[in-house]
Image (cartoon, rainbow, N blue to C red):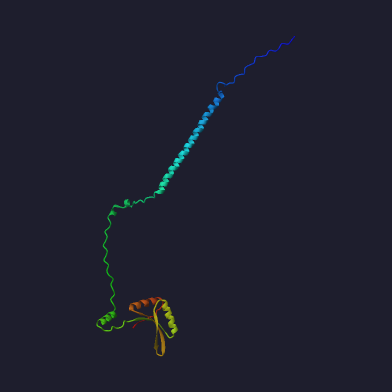
Length: 204
């Protein structure tokens, strides 16, 4: 028997993929899940940017008062007017200054008065007296010169005089002359403080 040809089956049309006309439901689910995350990230970025702006504004505001305080020096406050008591407004009475008495001039010595009277009468006045201090008397001139050098260091004016006592010549150291007895006494006191005790005043 002849074999019969096998029947060919009908070709099946390919199955339509889900989502050809409409979106896939899994894709929408993913988008819906990502949307809150994106919104949250955007919100956080905006919030951080706002904080940075606020910090900048605060920093600028802090710099301005510091600059103003540096430019304006502190003005002194005078509070002593408020702290003064009420009684201090009336100053105490000022006593008038006492009149100054003129210094008393010393009277001229009698010798000067006598010289002036003699000059008025046309007479030759007597010479002024001179005052000396004898610091020492030595037989040897070297010892006298040594004493003169010591007195010269103290600022005293000295001179040597020779006098003969019997057959011996003595060398005397004289300090002066002084114009008045007061000057001679002052020099004598100064020399005694320096150790010169044996001083003999003389008037010529």
